[in-house]
Amino acid sequence: MYTHAVRAPSIRLARPADLAAIATVHTASVRHLCAGHYSPQAIDQWLAPNSGLYERMLRSSTVFVAERAGEVVAFAAVRLATREVRALYVRPDAKGGGLGLRLMQRLERVARAFGMVELRLWATLNAVGFYERLGWRRDARQSGKRPPQRCVAMRKRVGGALREDR
View 1 (cartoon, rainbow, N blue to C red):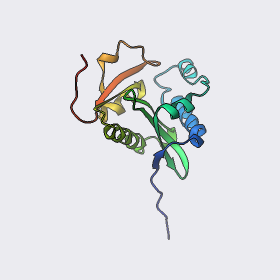
View 2: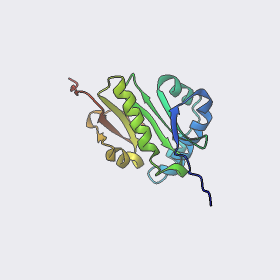
View 3: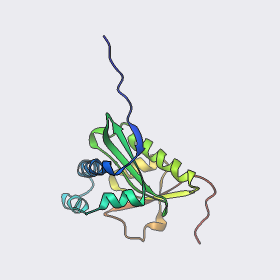
View 4: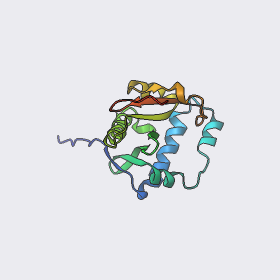
């Protein structure tokens, strides 16, 4: 009997045609994967319509999508100008397959290629352990800033010599 191998998801740069799929992945991920850590009201507020959100992200950040069988199942974004990971979302039915890891590795490679030493992000409560397993650490220096929702400030050294802020 012949069985064909299922191809691993591919990762590529996002394009404007991906915006609807990115919005779908974002909504599904927040609704299902964050539900145990945030109230339904907080999630509704988080996902309230924000006209142009994804278009702005695509213009201001380097955005990658992961596709499986031609369908976007995850995405990640890094804003190189501010050294900040802006997004990492995986569709619930694609969770646990290594896509988050592969997307973060891609963002970190891009940051290193642009000479960045460190990246920062705001982690959702459900994702803190994931980021810690990838070498991210809680960042007390950002804790005084107003976090989005109830998130945890994190940072990671991705290359070069780290110069302390003075």
